[in-house]
Image (cartoon, rainbow over all chains, first blue to last red; front, side, top):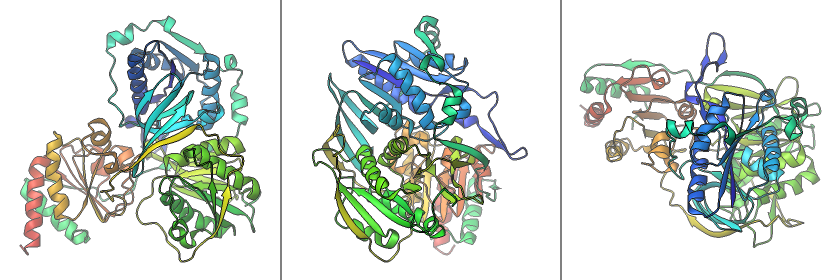
Length: 261
Length: 331
């Protein structure tokens, strides 16, 4: 069996902030990492690889040279090979355009039996890319997957839907969107990451994939026109003091607001 | 809407992965449709989760017409078949805008449909509107809610998936005209349904008047019982932050408040030991009053709450229960 995981190189989303003075998102010099949800997808794939005889697992990621480190970390979780699609076309960023780039890379790598995505990415929260790749490859898509069994010809997965748990079966090849509650991802050690040598990373440029940045720009998509701070103005009143006194003060305030029983 | 969504006789199509999701989409479409004098038409697929005969009653007057498609009974009704049903109606009606309510199958259907139709696609949409220049736009959170982005939906038809619903949905008297259709050709049949298990719905976070939520400030799973006592006293619903549901798995996903969980809009949101990461804050924007207990004066929840008691929740929580009990006894 062949498995491919699509993992995203992201800035640590907990470090991103909106500067009220300049009205800009502050994104420079932030730590980068594998998107949290993709770690769950990687874990699910590594568990399958451990369970099956003769299973090959590859990871594909988009990003600039700084994504090499992130990709090595993903490979160190238990993959055979990493594929880096060179970035630089981020101006065209849109989940459906990204899906077209990933699809071309996957076609170059050979369409695997199972193609795994995290359900969302921790920066975009679109939840569209996996389904879009499934559409472009004309494959079924199962999500949000919370458990998984696969054999040579089919996959059976439990899908956690609002109020329902569905068990669904699909023929292979199949694309899966992995729910973050499915597993606890392993953390590769520094030594394991260091052991991932350069020959286990292969790089695609857009032209290797028969694509161009300008061509991607012309595809249908969305364009971010503007943005503003996302917060809601709150009073920000801080209550200090011994617990009993502070608790009484809080109850008094909440009674004044009329939000208690 | 100049070339964007044609006035008079145009349609906004709405759909969803289950009846609630369809109703959410219809309620979101209605004001926009009125503005551009378009009609709202619903599309549903037999066999989707929660499918029942009373779907038209659930929708009431939110849609004028409802098209219910049937696929081959052997195939599972997932996002792929929903996309096929939508595609069938889009080809007849040529809408400028398709809105889907929050649901995993909605996201799948939206991605597939937009690629088929060459349309713009956006998810997690909190607002969809027509700007001064007559162009369709969607507002959605960026980086989990750090900022709110305005996306231009330049290619038609635009396909939008809504962010999780918060609070009560709009309801309207009436009943749509229903048309039953058969999907032809049948869907791709690559997925079959093996079993379906109803999960006991014990949680109503979206509709709760008061929500008490727990975060990483709780050292052990057992300690959540301390918060549960407060939940009872306040007749509240218990919620949690992402680490509690997704990393530690101390509480089920249905209790998760935030961008990927439930958006809440209670009178009172009480955050216990929650630092207030943006994707959590995105889920509590609709709360009237936010109160918090936290040890760290610099954590984001302090700026994003109306009242924060600075202190150890293991000490403040018992004191809070006492203060509430006293208040109730007229003390």
